[in-house]
Image (cartoon, rainbow, N blue to C red; front, side, top):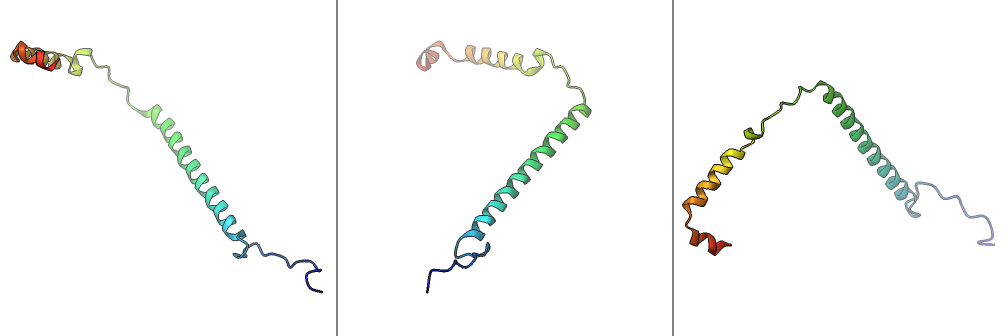
Length: 90
């Protein structure tokens, strides 16, 4: 009789049942995850390594940041543009 016996074993790489595609997707996802974890691990290790060997950071004065030139230019522009023109803008 047909259909009464046990079904034939399904091969794991049988594309008709989709098993091989699922396994390939899982292996690909695991491989990608492992690569990203290795990338971040190397990044963190080298950042930690370089942090201890970097030269000390220079301390800059507040005046060396360009505050004075910007202030001077703003005052000059304010004096050069007539008051009536400023009222149109604001």
